[in-house]
Length: 511
Ligand code: NG6
Ligand code: CA
Image (cartoon, rainbow, N blue to C red):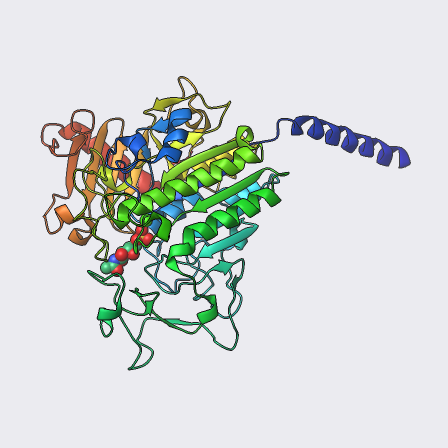
């Protein structure tokens, strides 16, 4: 017995020593920086000439710049759902744009990129915009806000609960609204709480940025929002300070966790509406608040990379830069996005943008950066934010359960820019929620399937235009999807329709 105990202790000791030996090559820290509503053409490293993004450009020039990098959907909630869970959002009901009082859309205990990394010893945090709901029925704003990120693999969260054009303007730190005074409870709802409650309609002349559509309910900081709220005054933040706060929180968290492998999801709100950047960025570009928000985003990226360098972590950290959906100009506030656009092309050469399944909706900047491990270069491998779960799990040595991350492929080699490494063979793109429209890319072919005929879910340019249920484009010769070649390529279209149907029906695309 004693001998047995002794020998197993020895075995453990041996294992520990081995693990210690390996710690010299500890798995990489992973920092995913997700921009909000940033289009393919919005950065100088992706061809923009109306503004400069030096910090993001540095990642692109010293890392891999992907030309076929995608997010899963052309709105925020489904992309974030798919990124975290590794499963297409169209497989789950209720994953369209989340309202202010949305319950948690990812159930407690679901395997996510965060839980996979946590399971192999990573410290994990999400800092920034959440927009995936909190709570079981609805958020308990004055109590414990759970389930939320901490129930799906994050050790820490510091959040804007939805988007900043939706109420309320408070931070959520772990399970609580930060700085909430119990004597001034926070109420959030869909109906005007009292006759005299000031709104963007009744007090329009007091607004510092006027609304153009929607966004005319409760006013905070001179801006009217989607939805109503009262109370929680001590907890409310200024829009101008969001980015500074998240950078500060991220730096503190990285410093505190530098001894462990860590995973930070830095979820920026730039350049989502309302585009109210810090005073020092206001007017910093010729493009108005939308361009200024890109400048602020670039600053955030610079601060994060400088921190990694200062702490001598850069060579052990994979940074992934991406976006949650393509660009939109007027998204509900009069912020001169269209008036000051000039020759800037937010979606680059692509058609469409936020809310639709043309390339502009989901083909977005996608950069990987890891000094010493990723050689500088450009890649046309087909990669998507949904693949980060399986790929990061592989890099960290976490095993992926068969029943999790059903559409996430391990593309670690492609993401690291290894020669000859392949991206995906196919990718399904969606607009918003379940039962919407699909884009399906296989090689250079792109099939569009508009089931819902929701003209609302098309870009401004396309609004109201009737589209055929199916269209086919050759992205090689026609990247802007302007010539529907379905009649000339009926065999290809029919195969792609069948493949798309089969992938949807199978409930998974990862074997
Ligand atoms: C839409 C909002 C839009 C934006 C979007 C979500 C209106 C009229 N439009 O419903 O302003 O908030 O939802 O954007 O209310 S996302 O990037 O978070 O998906
Ligand atoms: Ca978005």
